[in-house]
Length: 341
Image (cartoon, rainbow, N blue to C red; front, side, top):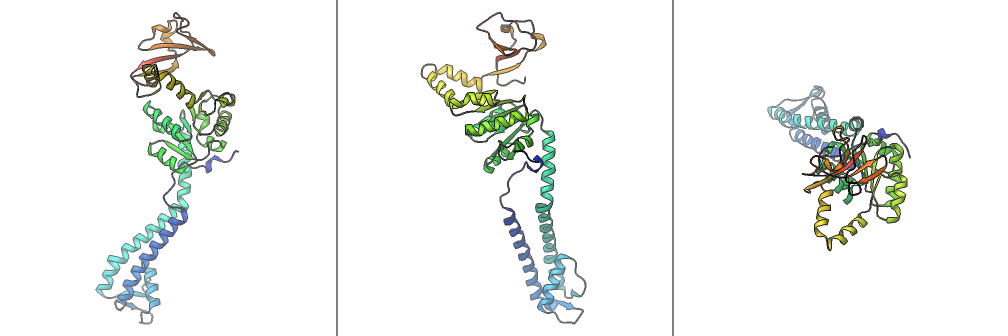
């Protein structure tokens, strides 16, 4: 389902609807006009009608309206000091407030949409190498917070969720957000999927996650996609859909629960490995030029776990003397939390 992604705005939802906001503004204008009208009517003897010499109620309504919206036409004028002071101290501030309300209304209903579309285009142009988090439930929020703890800049994280309340929470964290359905190609395109570094899918439902993965993979054949899945039988389907990493929180949690019964310290160590708050951190990176030709066990300041080479995996436990080659990717353990790759 493709559409013009320029109509998808990156914005927050206001506390009032459009019609509620318009009604509040109109009510405020009426109240301000009523105050000025009442003051002029009570002090109508301080006004002079240069046309017929009589100041009627219609004249007061007319004088109040033209005085607030303009500076008057001179056909009716204040002639006493009290009337002039009332116009100076009360009517003039009311005139300013009314014009501010008019300008604010024009911005809200005419200029704001244009400005938000312009701002959306500017944000989209700046998106590059960012992380897209599809779904901001418990899993998505935890993923965003973990990315932030790992040192990812808030500006490099974009959240997509159809629920406005969740979007408000995401924006409060400083990240960019779009209210919409991540399964729609136009929404993913507006999020800059073609230029994204990674996509994290936590949709809450496996069918929705599958649609998101398929749409994202169609837009960007090379982007890394990690997805949370609930049913074990859907793991293979999501890999076929294009996910590079499929995580089942239930299965993974079950493994930790089973190990925790007799291997508590091992579970704590595993938690350290996957959390930015741990004492150790596991990372994957490209081999440096200075490391080529050296054994994996000789890594400086890290413990080498495995080499990823041309689609194959070589563990350090399988070959203690494995040599690092060009274009290898390394999996290692470092201390002190996440380290930039």
